[in-house]
Length: 222
Ligand code: PMT
Image 1 (tube, rainbow, N blue to C red):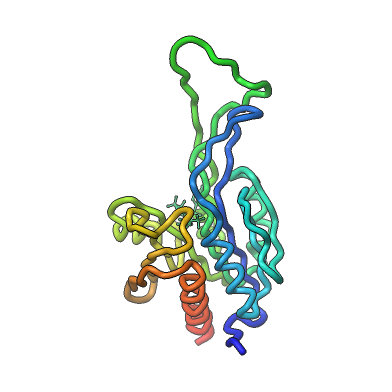
Image 2 (tube, helix red, strand yellow; image 1 turned 180 degrees about the vertical axis):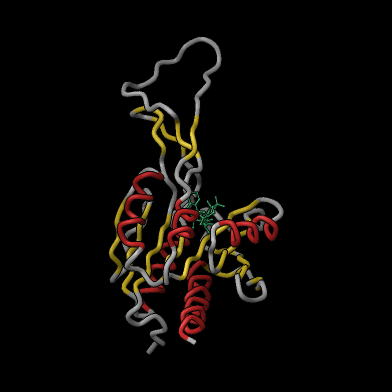
């Protein structure tokens, strides 16, 4: 029988991409498949946690014993996260949220015209930053997907978002990051040394993260 490291804990997880609508047939998005976040949700539930998964549009099915809420845009994901945040013990933000959305969503399908097309984008709400500002007792874990200077950017996020841990993926590493069944991550801790994990399945990364969360919760109690 597996150890139930998160028995009784309420864990909120985000996964997948967001879609920002340009018109009824087009949207702005990224390559997140949701595999990383769904693996974390599955392993957290197996560890005895009460898991709420806020998911962007992906083609995965809800893991056993997990309450999954589907959202589409960054704004919808933000609203859903805020509903559960205050009641959560742990928040893990593995979703790849769009930083920008089109200023205007056209109600009708846009027709092509001569010449180039210029679209104007505006910032979406930074969900992780908002959670960092409103954090009470919660353990707050963010992800960072970077193509360069992973350590610098991850440490910067750890501080500026008031997170307890940033899971950094170097998405230039073969087999790591978006879409794959494997990932290579580094844990950047607020109170402790960084730890680089080997390339392993997303299920194994999720298990390592659950163990890390267990330690963080224990530290909080002492
Ligand atoms: O879904 P998979 O195909 O399995 O891929 C997994 C993954 C690569 C998407 C995942 O491991 C990952 O790294 N997720 C975060 C990707 C990302 O968008 O990183 P970022 O550096 O843009 O964002 C940093 C953090 O801020 C993230 O925790 C993100 O959820 C959060 N964020 C970002 C923008 C925003 N508006 N609000 C946020 O909360």
